[in-house]
Image (tube, rainbow, N blue to C red):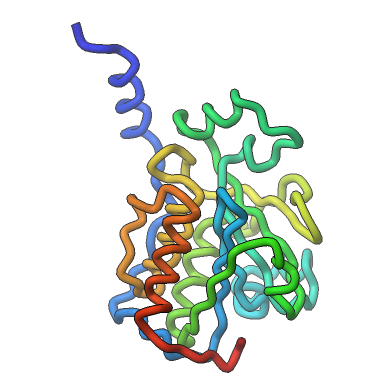
Length: 221
């Protein structure tokens, strides 16, 4: 007799949404642009810090919410776990093994990104205009919109001037927060395999290995 639980798990995962999708970007990443992109690791979770102007042009509601901030950090995660005031074992297990709704966390960040996230690991990439445009498209596609194309705000965020938004896609073991970051990196043309980026460390190590193998200098840093 076949085990029931694994079959149920496979059935659930096959029926859930793996969005947001990677944005097609044919040219390989060059690391030769002038737009600074910061990838921040908070220990278990990674996110992007991007120039605010570009994504606010794409999503005007973010300008209404965050005003003239120079940067906005974005992270994608499990809806209940990410917004919880207290993390319990039940929330952790549910987030890891059960397909659940997702949210995007957006945070206004001042000019000195390194100082703002002084307790976090940060890696920096230099993006061309086209690479930045692809990443902005990926992040914008990660936020759910209503029938009028407006993003859907939820609760206030967890630190600083921040906000949660309803996101696209289901959160589950093979479509989690660090795979989301890896999808964004793949969207700018990096040779990365999102499926295998289960931890924040695996994303940061990939970026460190890239940095050690190349030399780059962004005008935006």
